[in-house]
Image (tube, rainbow, N blue to C red; front, side, top):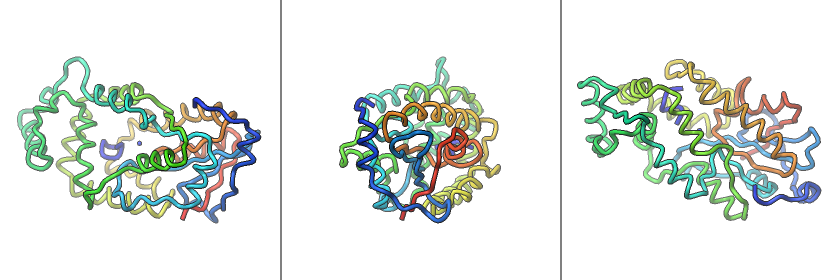
Length: 296
C-alpha cells in the first residue's frame, strides 16, 4: 500500500458471568459484514472483530444496534492503540520526526522540494518549514482531509471510543505508539518521500480511489475491500508483511491469551481482516469459529 492507503485490561470478569450476560446476535446470511463473532476453542463467552475506516465524514459513521450490543456484551474494547490515553497521543507527536537529524529537503532535489513546499503552502496552508523534520508518512496523512467531501470529519475508532465511554467499557491497545513508530521507521525515508511526492502529483487518482474505498466500506463488501487493497496501481507490496501481515500474526498471538479470560470487542482497520493472512482467516486456522454478524 502507498502512504495514502496505509493511512490502520485492568478489570477481569468471571467467564461464566460473561457468558450469561451476552445477548444473542443475529448472524448475516453472507460474509458481507464488518462485524464478526468469535467463538469456540473453549471460549466461555463470545468475542467480536470489527473492521474500521480511520477517517470519514462524521455523519457517515453510524453504528447498528447489533454492534452496540456486541460492545455491550464485551468486557473490554481493543483498538490498534489505546487512543483513549492522552499520553499515547502526546507520544505520537514526539515520534513524528525522522531519526538521525534527517530533514525533508535532504530527501528531494531542489525542484521536488519546491513542489512539496508549494503544495503544503497553497493547498494545506501549512509552511513546510514547520514540518521539515516530520516523517513523510505523517505528511501524507495530512492530505486525507482535502479528499473529504465534508468539514465535520471523524474516525470510526473515535466514535467507538465515545460508544465505549457511554457503555462504561475500558479501551486498550494491541500496539504501543513506540511500536507503530518503529514500523514506519523501517520504511526508508527516501521511499516515503517518493510516495509523498507521487501522492501530490496524483491527487485526482487518489481521490477516486479514496471515494471508492469509502463506498465499498459502507456496503461492507469484504471481497471488494480486499480487491482494492491488492490494487497494484497504488500498491506497496514490498511492505505488505511489515504493514499488515506481521502485525496480524502478533495480534492473533495476543488475542489467544486475552480471549481466554474475557470477552473483547476488537476494532482494527478493515484491511487487517481480509485475505489469507487476515485476522478472520488466521483466527480460523487457530481453531476458532468466526461468523459474520448482521450489521445494519
